[in-house]
Amino acid sequence: MTNLPIKKCKDRTMIPALPTTLPNIAIYLFFLLYCFFGIAIITDTIMCAIQRITTTMRKIKKEREKTSLVEQGMNTAQRTDEEEFEYVKVWNPTVANLTLMALGSSASEILLSIIEVIGNGFEAGVLGPGTIVGSAAFNLFTISAICVVSNITVFYISAAFSVLAYVWLFFILIISSPNIIEVWEAALTLFFFACLVAIAYAFDVRWCKRKMSAMTSAMVAKSYPSLSPEDHAKILAYRINQANTPHDRIQMTSSWRESRTEQDVVKFMTTFKTISVDGRTKPRIEWDARTYGVQRGDKKIQLKLVRRGTATQPLTAAYQTVNGTAKKDMHYLDKRETVQFEPGERSKAIELQILDNGDWKHDDVFYVHLKIKDKLPEDRTKLGQCDTARVRFVEHTDFPPFPTVEFAKNNYVISENDEWVRIYVRTRSLPIHEQNVIVYETEEETAEAEYDYVSVKNGQLVFEPGEIEKYVDIEIITDNPDQDDETFAVLITKINEEVVSAAAHLRTTITLIASDRAIQNLRNMRTLMRNYLKEMQLPHVTATWKEQIINACSVNGGDTANATLADALKHAFAFPWKVLVAFVPPPELMAGWPCFVTALGLIGSVTAVVGK
Image 1 (cartoon, rainbow, N blue to C red):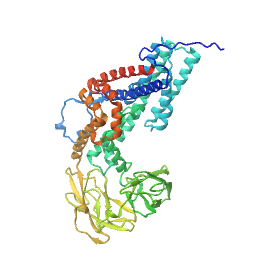
Image 2: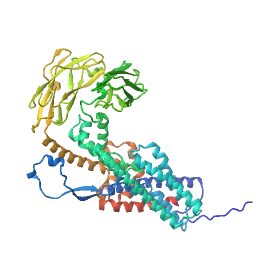
Image 3: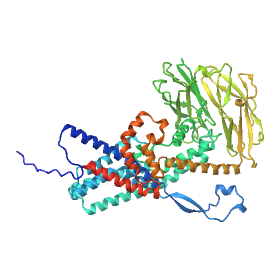
């Protein structure tokens, strides 16, 4: 008989031991899983506190710029010598991600290990080290595999340090001092962590300076020309919030679910995103129509690619279908191909297969994305505004008995410094399987033709079979000194050679905003942006204990109108934990630190129970 060392089980100091029977095992397992559920809820509170901490702002004196945008719109006599201040974040997102976020998301594993080490006389426990190493491996491999990497440089640094950490562990546990962690090894490990934070911060700061150019209000306005200034402010706030928010795997918890404003922004960014920002006269490639229509019984749809501007070089473009409410292999056949343009070639037609036996519903839509795959270095062709085509299912009942078209918007507001304005026209009742010709012209109002814009007379917009929404471009003349807002109109005069009478839907107005007015609009956009940014940053943070207790006792956070049976069952199951967490200090109290410390202590207590 082999003589094996006998270890005496330690007495349960927190939870009494029960006889090992199947019912008792089931009870232990249930409460163990319930404790894990509680840890997830408490961790959610910790993340709210961390988000509040990392959004803390400090007031700094603003250096006066020599040629700022606002100063360009003000007279020298109007300027004051008063000091200007601005608010900046205390925490860098990358530093917060590697310190506070790492602590918050791994609090249960870290506290479990600490509790075990102290309880075992500073010897490693059974669960602690394994959970920490396993969690780190899960972050490095699984999370990295399924997540989108937004900053590749910081990811490379983190991945390199993660691999080095395993090598370092092997060295100190196997080679240097087997099974013993010495003080100098612990100190050096802590120093390595500080190096990681410093290096990641340095690369992040350099990267942020480059990426901020993509977040200016001017670029947002050009990328989404059909949206209002209020929507531009939402997009700008969304981009800044995404750039400044620390990211970690714990975002899967409810504290990081998108607010309703963020969901709205993502929706219309997906719908209205058109492009890379480029000038009207620069060489570009795009779809000839923004929206194509299909009906029941259609087995194919033809889309047209057009190349504008100079076309002296060969060009290869690639396109692919993307699911919307219509799904591949259910409503259409997926297609990913390239198109070769020879020098001087201006257009190409592609064909997509439609499944007529699909369960099409009204306004089901899928998308066809376009990108430039290969071009010569000297070729400056870029994607145009219409780089995403939509294919939409159109019911026969959509068509009234008379032919009609309309402008997508009844007014457009642009800066007088813009080179052109794109106006969208869509059919409402014209046969989509026939060619339809629309005649349009410009009309003076306060803006003068050939002085403020290039006039158009008897311009033709041809809808080929299947096209239901197209565009016309009107050139804006920018070299005039006028400072007043001016307007002109675009009218549809004929539909398939039939003269149409004036109607609201056959007329759209273009307003050219003067430079000083543009500055005021910029100020208004900034004000809106701040409001939306605040709404997006802390969508779930409560300010008082009363609010927390009410939310804890309410189904679906008080939104009972949209609550389902599943929400009610989850609320009942989590009710004890919700009430317990409701007594944690609110995240708004003292910048979130009391909430963070209290929740950390609470999760430590529950973790101790799990360890037993």
